[in-house]
Length: 365
Image (cartoon, rainbow, N blue to C red; front, side, top):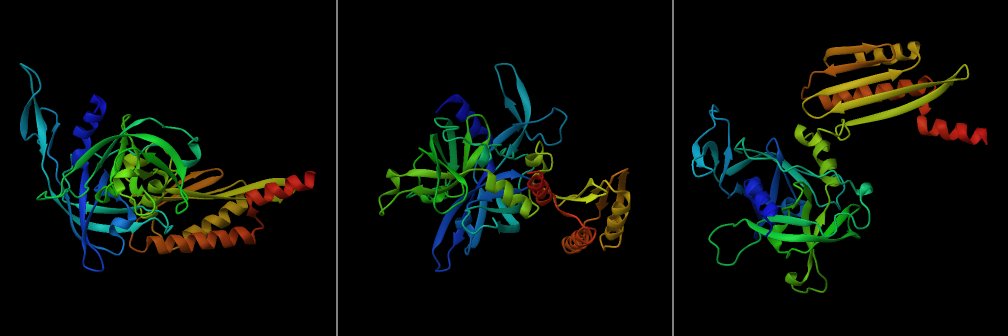
């Protein structure tokens, strides 16, 4: 194993947990999951769906160097002949499920997420890659070195054992049963690897182990490992308001926000309108934009008449951003306000902006 991949193992072994489950017929099994921040873990859907979760635990031990004045220092590491550094010791721990598991909204996508308590706050989150499906070519990342971490059952082992496998990306495929890109990885596929993480030598998550690629009941050892890429992870986490801030940084609100654009003609001038919603579970904002002051004021009245508690308003000539207090009824109240806004926009004569532009283009021809 290369030095870089070994360093990844040393860094992230503590970030991978096993999931012991019991199926509906009483059979016990095991799968894997990995930490992406804030106690949130990602796994394969088939590991947990319709199964009773018996235990979630980490097994690795590690030492995280800390500042000399940090109260988290628990040990002193020898880092050279005459040098030592304070460090925080991370030990194996049993974790308690507090949220989830939740699934990707498409049943065919083999992704699930959940959140735990009892996780050492110094356990690192494994960064998700930025290689979205549409950005990948037919051979991107092919022959890249990767590290696979998971918990395949080991015969005669007394307890679940974290297994590390070095592999390489051998190809990219579209599979019949999923709308997302899968990587073909050369590591040996075994059952408990499901839900495990595949990390590139450049230190980001390539994807999640979902299955072995075998046919006709051939031995798993002869097959390749299928790894679903990161895009469905990015979709699933914000759907359940579980995308950690460190994973959303750099995306400019892409995963936690949505924007609707509308347009109409007024005195032969194009009037544009948009509704932008940002909701990551920690903050809830709604921005109304309109280039017509009269229409803007009508839309603002819709928002203020809703049941969400407004804690701040940021105003500019053509837009207002509302910051709301998050409550148990926030989702329901937000949906009500959104419906009222869309209805009012239609009453004011706006149509979807793409439809407007298409109509204008057709008339121009």
